[in-house]
Image 1 (tube, rainbow, N blue to C red):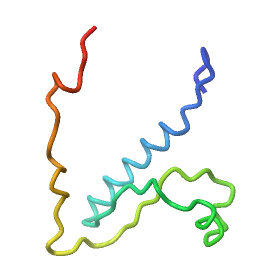
Image 2 (image 1 turned 90 degrees about the vertical axis):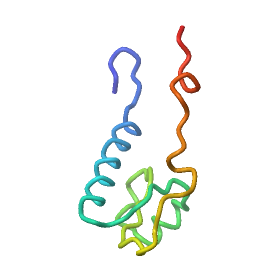
Image 3 (image 1 turned 90 degrees about the horizontal axis):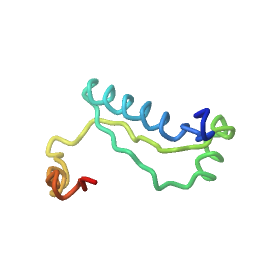
Image 4 (image 1 turned 120 degrees about the vertical axis):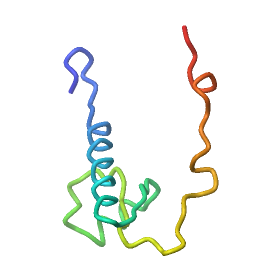
Length: 87
């Protein structure tokens, strides 16, 4: 909790940890993706050890197909001028 406004950084901290997990998965030569759209009650039913946790994301892990490649728009980026407004 941030002291001056009591903001709970749990989602930010979870995102940082998840990013490091994804980088380690890649370092191991495996593939994964961040999945945020999932049925949390169903997962908790199937995996009761998760019942006391607020689930942020899930990461399927496996070996990428030989012909796997990023989505067509993966490397399309906005310019700084498109993304940033200077005040």
